[in-house]
Amino acid sequence: MEKKKTAVRKVEKKEKAELDPFLLDLLKASSPSGYENEAQAVIEKYVGSVAEKLEKDTLGNRIATINAKGSPRVLLSGHMDEIGLIIRHVNKEGFLFFDAIGGHDTGLISGRKVRILTEKGYVYGITGRRAIHLLTSEERKQTPKLSSMWIDIGAKTQEEALKRVSIGDAVVYDNEPFLMENGFLCARGIDDRGGTYVVQEVLRRLVKEKMAASLMSVSSTQEEIGTRGVITATYGVHPDVGIAVDVAHATDFPDGDANKLGEFKLGAGPVIARGPNICPKVFEHLKACAERLKMPYQVEAEAGPTGTDARVIQLSREGVAAGLVSIPLRYMHTPHEMIALSDVEATVRLLAEFIRSLRPSDTFKW
Image (cartoon, rainbow, N blue to C red; front, side, top):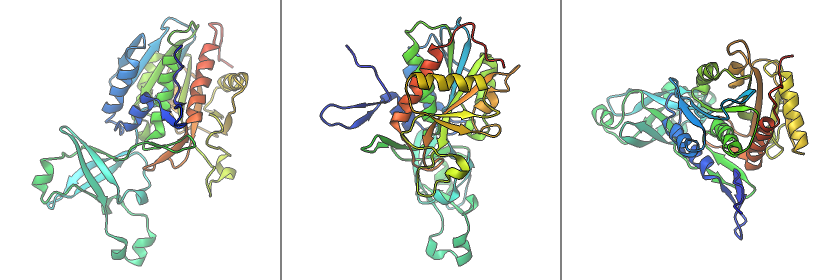
């Protein structure tokens, strides 16, 4: 009997965690907002042959559906875009100046190997700025400005550089995912390829099960620049219930501020949001599912609209019963983010149980 695939498994003898190839391929993909082509291709590869239908829309979302005629209609959304950079100017000496796609800590940009996504393939470079020895005492105290940094691709002239790259090419950090011995995963853009993996993996696991609900798993675009892709996706899907799957700030690091954010730990289970952006019935249903599975979970208080796809889902059409489940994550929006693979697997199991437990008579009006 074939063992059930999970986000992580133990390899015999080696006793080392090994990533699900689906998740690994998503994390290797370059997918800054508006340039999600590589992530789209991964979704198509792993989900296209499994879903009843896999649709694309004008904003580049990928919408996978099973049990299309079921009720209630459930949308799961995890955004497949990541933060990045965009080339805006090439100077006479061939250095590339850039703007940010999404929210960056500019103090972490310099000195990184990057890949530039061009029509002809990747071009590699290094982000640079004046060395610390050449900064004034005042400049050393300041957060560097984007205009004080550039990308060096080894070109000698503007003409030479523009033969290799174009204005508007997107850029991402060039690094590979890696696993630590304790099952912690480090990678660029886990926010939110981790979430898009979860929503599509839930669909892949439920595809052969009998269930009442209809499931639409959306890998949404452009979340990092204003939750844009899910706006059109939710309107088109017209769900009764919509749950965003994203990441939440873990506070289990040396100066994590639990008093401000709440106490969230890697390996302690999914983070279920509660507050005005969340339908109370969805929260209670998710909580009941976690307790039925005897699964540890964490609760996050959200005082207003969340910075996730859930903020848009809730206000689509005449209103949607919204929920938010997050994977605790350290070092958000940096070149190396970190999660526990056990939390990824638990989030998949929680959402599968939520959908499996729904009945046509369930209503989330309150």
